Structures are given as C-alpha cells and as structure tokens.
Picture 1 (cartoon, helix red, strand yellow):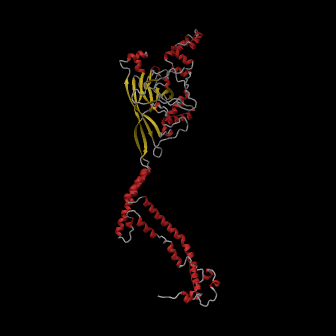
Picture 2 (picture 1 turned 90 degrees about the vertical axis):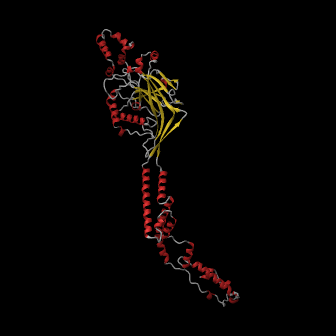
Picture 3 (picture 1 turned 180 degrees about the horizontal axis):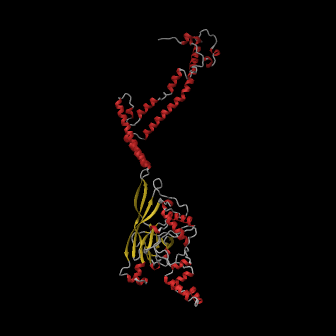
Length: 560
C-alpha cells in the first residue's frame, strides 16, 4: 500500500520540529518515573525476584529435604488418616533416635578405656637394677656408722653379751687398783680380740662389716666375673643395701643379648647369721627370718625393699626368671595416672615408690625436725631417742592413714618386672666336702649361711601394656549418624537444611518488621515531580516561522 512521505504532509520545516518533540517526550518519560509509579514497579519486578515468604520457604524445604516422613505429613490434599499415620511413624523414629543417641552420648561421657597387650622382641635389653638387703640391719656390736648412729654408753651396755658384763664388773672391782696403769695402756693400744666389746665402749665403733664389705664368695654376670666394685650402696628400711647395675654418672648400664640362666647375674653370698641381733621380744621391727631381701626394679625407681622385695633363703640356689613390662596409662579423665615430677626435687622421675618416700620424708621432717637414715634431703638425722619417741610412731601413724595423707597415683609411664621363682638345695652331698675345703667352713655353716641368687631374663622380649581410649568422638559421630540414617534417613546435611530453614524464617520476620516503616513513608510521596507533557499535536504547527536551530534549546528545556 502506498503512503505519502512524512515530509509531504508535514512540510519540510515542520518535520524537524516533530522529531524534536518526540525525543523530548521520551526523555521526560524516563526522567520523571519515580519509585512509586506503576511503570517503576513493573520495572522493579522485572529486575528483582519476588520476595520469599514463609509459605514459599516451607514449600522449598519440603520439596528438597531428604528427611523421611516429613514430606508425607505435610503433603497438601492428603487424607487426615494418612497424614496421622506418617506423623506417628515420624515421632516414633525420632524417639528411638533420641534414645539411642543419648545412650551413646552418655557412654562417651563415661570415658571408657580398654587395655592392649603386645609382646615385642628385641636384640638387646637393659638389665634391671637388683637391690639386695640382709635381713639383719646391722651387727650386734657394730651399728651403722654412715650415716652416724652411735648409741650412748648406757645404751651400748645392752649390746654386750652376758659373759662380757660379768667379766667387766669382775675386772673393775677386783683388779682395778692393782693393775690400773698397766691395763690402761693395754686397753687402749693392745686390746685382745675377745675383749672387743670394751673397745666399743671406750672408742667410736669402726665401720661395720656388711653384706658386701668384702668380695662376695662368687659373682658372675653373663659368665664374666664381677665384684663389690660393681655394686653401689643405698640406705633403706633394712639398713645399708647394695644395688647392682644402678644408674650412676659416668657408668653405662649393663645389657644382655640372650635369655635364660647364665646370661644374667649369679652371685653367692654369706649372710653371717652369727652376727644377727638377738631377739628379746616381739616388736614391729623384729625379724625372725634369715636370708636376704631382693627387689628387681628399673633404674629410674628408688628401692622399696621392705614392701616390694622378695626373700631368698640360705641353703638354696634361687632362680629368678624375669620379664620386662612397659606400661602406659591415660591421664584424667580417662585414667588416674600422674606424669609430673615431684615438687620437692628429691627424685627426678615420678614413681609410686618415689612419691611414698617423698611423702614419708616430709611428714617426719615436719613432725620430728629430723629424717631417718634412708630418707633423702638435707635435714639432720634423727638420734636414737628421736627414732624411738617420734620417728617410728609417726611413720606407723602415717601408714595407718596413708590413703588420706599420701595420694600417690600410678605414673603414666612405668617399667616393671614380672618374676618367676624356683629353687634347689645347696650344697649337695657330693659338693659339701669341696665347699668346706674351698671356703674353710663346715657343712652346717654353709647350709645356714650360704645362698646363691641367679637373676636372668626368661626371653629376650618385653610386653607393652597400653591403656587406650575405647570410645572417641569419631565413634560417637559414626553411631549417631548411622542411627539417623536408619530411623529418619537424615545426615549432617539434612541437619544443615533444617538450620538453614530456621535461619530463613527468622530473617524473613526481621526484614518484615524493618521494612514496614519504610514502605509507609514512601507510600505518601508524589508520583511525579514534573509538569504534564503537552499533546504532540499542539506543539507541531505549520505557522512556525522561527528556525529550529534558533528556538530550540537543550532537551531539558524542551521537556520542561
């Protein structure tokens, strides 16, 4: 269809004016639209999605969640009976889940443990420390001198045999005035051996002969000879004792590479029963037995022979097969072990025996202002009167109430040695004459005083006993997660979906409260801030004689 050109019916001068008016109207429409206008609302709806509501958020959750039964309970249009059945099933599953989950949580809060025992083989093992004590604390006429323990003269008289007292008084009353000067020099410089008790009375006693003051009758370690220089002295409740393979500065510990007899310590001792103290009555320290007490322990643990030692009788060869055990315990709240060193500083490594000795030392020093000979520290030693009147009663009292005063827990890491004892009688009838000739002793003396101790590893292995956590956080989460999947088909992500739903609901409520006032304020504003636009036909005229370039300004001037 044919149509005339715009220039034909508008004219050549009116056509530019019409185009400019149309351009101005379009600019005015874009500038004068405000936030409250319908056009702006339509444009905002196109740019921004619709604001989510609670119904829309809930519908989205129900369509995406993997929580079994929840979709069936909240399905729209379902029957009441069907929805009630699914609600009952969902509540039952949730109840079972909470019951079993709480049971697993309480089990985890009880901090259960289990013990793992494992045997490991080694090419070489450090030999333990062997502490040996004679049941006789000190000889009758020679009490211990180091530390000094000198009975006063009245107390020294009770150590004399009866025949010696009679001889002393007889000599004093009948021969004193006649032979005073002659016997004066004789007593002090040329005293005969059978008058030894008088020497003790007038002079300080010489060092006491002890179990290993002279070389032992026989000593071998792994087949090589050893002697008294391989032992170190230590004081215990049994007096002066001796330790083999103790930890000393500048000395290396002895090791063994084989198990069985002949690959450890073999020592023959003479207990010297003739020098045992006589027994006049029953006391707490009265010893009715003869022999030695032996304790096998690690180098880091002090000896505690009077409670942890075992006895070795004379007239027997005792075989002690031992096995090393390395124990590891858990600290609280799983266990009750202690790993910190003692505050007193007496011992560098914590152990039960170190804690006991430390506690007894502090208790005796606080109550008696002295310490016993086997106790560490720098306090002065107790005198015999303090021993009798204070130290011994205080120590007995402490032992009676030790559970409340001395709480010594098990160390977190410790080494102990299991023992299996067996013995055979010595001497045999065929070796009795040989031993009599070798030691120049009678067969009865050998039977009553000689013993042989053989300590060795049963095998070149050790046991590790570890206390482990029986139920940890990973096991707890695994049990709860498995029960969640079994009962309600949920997982950790399902729980996150529920938290996300709760977050969206709370955020929607808060945004509604905050945006309500802004909407009320913006609702009363004017829709437009400009004048209405005139009709296009009114602005276009054929009688305009002024050129367009001289009458028209900017677009804003044309629009407004």
